[in-house]
Structures are given as structure tokens and as C-alpha cells.
Length: 105
Image 1 (cartoon, rainbow, N blue to C red):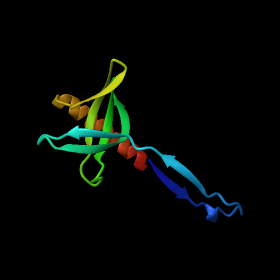
Image 2: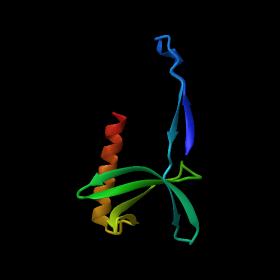
Image 3: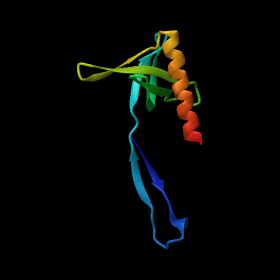
Image 4: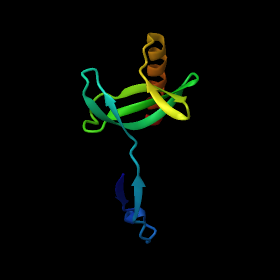
């Protein structure tokens, strides 16, 4: 969790709008193909077809390529799965690109 101080003194209303916000990071530890544990931060979730997907970024290297995994609920817990099917990956990649384009516009 990190604290961010937002200072809005320049809004012109004459009031001090400084305040603290708490932002929680959802951190997961994944094991890469070499058996190395990597801390990943959940950045965003989005829907594609009837499934939910998670975008994860490496916590120590947020500039690295992200990872998209399918989220499924099992026994009241969320479980992440690799996307193995090429057709599913194509649909998910297109949905994510559309999400990014909508957020930029």
C-alpha cells in the first residue's frame, strides 16, 4: 500500500484541497518458465466473451511486457490460468487493444 499526497491548491477556489489517498496494490507471486519466482501487480481486469482476464505487470520492472491471464472462480477463490488456445488469445488481445484505445480517446 502506498500513500499519495494530491495537492489541488491551484484550482482557484481558495480552499486547501490537500489530502491523502491510500492505494492498495494486489501483488501475486508467479513462477516463470525458468522456475524463478516473480512478483506481479494486478493492473487491470477486463471481460472478453464470457470470461474475465487480468493484466499483470512485473512489480520490479513495470516497463516490461505485461502478462494477461484468464481468471476463473474455483471453490470461492480466484484462480489464474495461462491462455493456451490461439483463437482465445487472438480474441483477448483484440479486446485488450480496444480497451486501451477507448481509454486513450
